[in-house]
Amino acid sequence: DIQMTQSPSTLSASVGDRVTITCRASQTINNYLAWYQQKPGKAPKLLIHRASTLESGVPSRFSGSGSETEFTLTISSLQPDDFASYYCHQYNTYSGTFGQGTKVEIK
Amino acid sequence: EVQLVESGGGLVQPGGSLRLSCTDSRITLNNYAMAWVRQAPGKGLEWVSGISGSGGRTYYADSVEGRFTISRDNSKRTLYLQMNSLRAEDTATYYCADQKGFPGSLDNWGQGTLVTVS
Image (tube, rainbow over all chains, first blue to last red; front, side):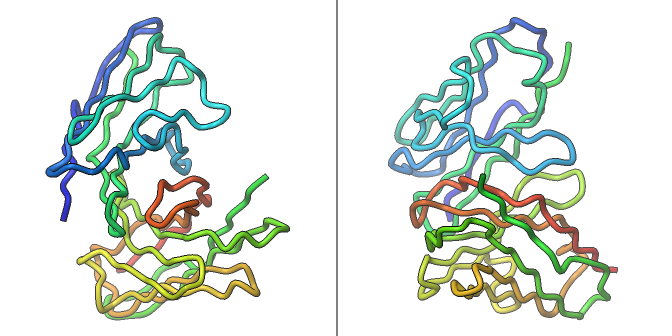
């Protein structure tokens, strides 16, 4: 099975900060990597798929990059609505796996 | 607007069974691949099972293999998860989600249904 290691687990930041979350796969996943945002009590929401393709309606301050086994989610200027948990997800295999999640908190 | 609605969650004793349903409200039947993902209280997301658009291919996480069965009835636009031999560690909110590809990203999610094994 492919393991996904996401870091950091918690991130404290202020509005306007640039935020970076990293996900590392235990083997190459051919850019089949998605990022989700989840707010308390809500279902996850797809932000990015194929490592860097922004979903329709997702603000352009979100971006994804990376390849092979190293991937990054960047929020260029953190907004109040962005305080949430974020998960990476590899879907290179039929049995997908998630990273452990990153909680973005208000500093 | 895409709407996936899960139902069937509840309280069940260890060793018991439960069947979850996920109904797709879309007018056009797209036969997307579908998946179940769960989240234990206060924990992260865990992929549980996936099924192709036709229902001919199914996949399971090791943690549920042999105990859970995913299926779908496209005529009813409904996805199912039959859960048998439930354990305390299966306690979680279960989400269904659709995937344009198979495998694919989880594009649209339901609101989740809580399963408590106790």
